[in-house]
Amino acid sequence: MANTGKGPVLTNDSRQFKSKVADLRNYGVASSDAESRWPDSLMQQMRKAARGIVLGHLGFMQRFRFLIGFLAAKYRARKVDLSPIREKGMTNEKFLATQIEYISMFSALTQVLGVEQAEQIMKQVMDVTAREALLLCLPEASDVRSFPDTMAVFREYLCGSLKASRTAGCLETTIAEDRDNAFQFNVTWCVWLELARLLGAPEACRPNCYSDDLVFPDYFGSLGIDYRRTQTLACGGTCCDFRFEKRQD
Image 1 (tube, rainbow, N blue to C red):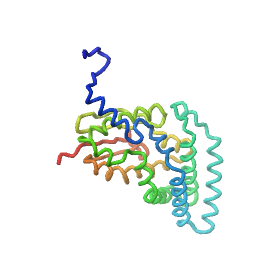
Image 2 (cartoon, rainbow, N blue to C red):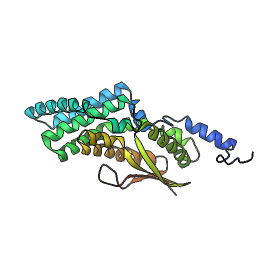
Image 3 (cartoon, rainbow, N blue to C red):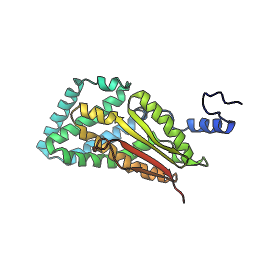
Image 4 (cartoon, one colour):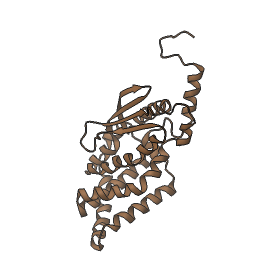
């Protein structure tokens, strides 16, 4: 078949490869939409674990102050203008409600214990809750390993995810590197951070970033891919630089 100038010509093998990658869990699904697909039972477990960890750090009167602060933060959140986020394309109300609840919890902890201690406590929450949840956002590792080249799979998979995430208004990204053995994308805008900023608690995003580093190194390592991130927007970086490189062993 002649190349018409409309893009690369796909061979039967490449079409089959793309079709198989598209069958992987959450292919072409925005990160925010993948999160909103978490089972209700898992969400309940996560909330229960979070409450237990948070309340375990508080005395009786502190618990009372925390509860009042949490309800007040949720009330204030209802009055916040979210148009800067919605204008990006964000329409997933379930995702927004979950994030607002989390940020309200962080804000209430900050009022009782201060930002630094609140951040450490919410990282403890992530230690307990993040792994199962984040793994559900990714394809089964065994499904990825069924392909002869796991790096090629994730280059294709990530491109689909990033496109969907931009459309859904949860991420803005640029591709910094795209080679057979390495892929890097930089997040230049993130709904998790922007929502936390709008609600007056930008530090609430840092435990979310922390959860990535709990899960991604082991997950991608099991696929023969090294994961690295040297900076995040939430910690003052110019971007979140997600880099993936095929191991050469």
